[in-house]
Image (cartoon, rainbow, N blue to C red; front, side):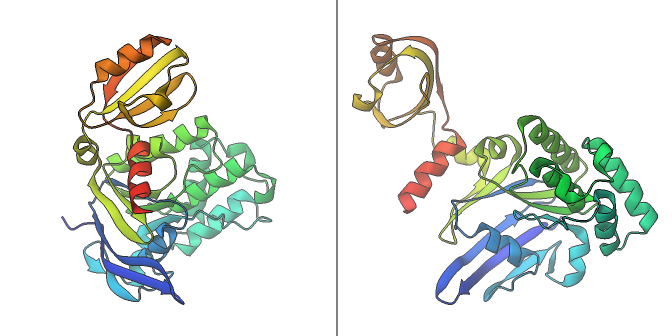
Length: 299
């Protein structure tokens, strides 16, 4: 099977600013892929070139085993980070309009729109104007618009933006169902916890370049189990401990990166002298830790 997405050294500059710097990666069919990076890293520019909004100065975009052409857009669903809804249109009219743009009949667009609105708990809002909806509800409308025509590739730029935890879970469940149905999903987000749970592979970009790419499990395993997660009550002096390379402290919970060769039991002994320890676990680093570490090295 060909990869759903293949970027071959795409490069884009705006005046003298390099937005994307000879970026290459592949996304397997039926997988969930995370495109990550700090603000201004080039994620949105990459996505825009992937779907033909912008044209690369160099390099090629291949989709579904073919060099990019406009007809492929009918097989793609795109949820942009910026809301692109017509505020004064009624929700159902808006979704039917977008469905019609993808070649659906009015009846089919209406049926699918009503089904998805029921699924995402928006049925009572279908006759309301978009501007009357909360930001979270508008985000769910955009999500429906992206999948209404049953695309093979979904590109979701910050899909969980504006959503409370319950609605974020709702969208996550739909994404997993789409994956099981063989759809390919690319999503870009700052929510590292969501990436860690959903994605099989990632590409971390900074200043338009790929600085970490590949299978997420292999990436995490390459860092080894040198991170301690600790729940405690007290005030251990983490900032003065010679065993520690870096620390992310949340108050009564801490994630500690040990220095090479450091003994985790020595850390436990030190901490227990200053606090009551209710959890102490040696684990692989979280994706958030890896993100901070790699971006910091690239600064």
